[in-house]
Image (cartoon, rainbow, N blue to C red; front, side):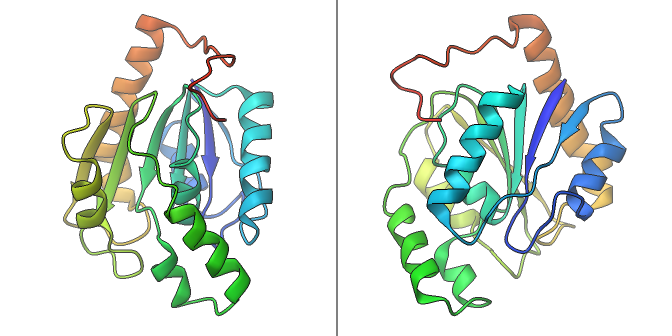
Length: 192
C-alpha cells in the first residue's frame, strides 16, 4: 500500500512519526515529503502536488499537517493524528500573519468529507487536546470515525502504533484491496 505522510509544525520528512510508521508498516511504501508548514497556501499547494504525483492509497497526517488535510477532499482515505487548531499554534508561534491565515482556514473547516476520515486522539495530548472539539463537530457524520488512546500524548506512541493504529491500517489496506485504489480526480466534489 502507498502511504503519504504529512508532518506537523516543526516536523520533518524523517521525523519520529514517519520513522515509526515505516517501522510498523514494513510492507508498505511510505512517502514523507518536507513541506512549507508555515505558509498555509503554499503548504496546501505542496500537499496537492504530492497527492497528484504520488497517488497514495491512504494519507496519514499529524498535528498541523492533520489540520491542513482536513481541507483536502481528495478521494483518498485520511488518518489524522491529533489535529492542531490555531489556538494550539499560538502557544508556540507568535507570527501574527501565520496565525491569522490558520484562523481563516479554521473558519473553512468542511462539514462533510467525500472519503473516510479516521481521527486518532491521544487523551494525554497537552499540545493540541482537541478531541472534544472534533467529535462535537463531526459526530453523526458517517464519513468520520473517532479513535482514542488513553496512553498516548501528542505524538503517535510506539505502543499504539504497533497495536490499534496498525489494526486501522490493516482495515484500510483490506478496503483498498477489495475496492481498488483508483481515484476519480475529476470529481467536482473533490478539492485536492
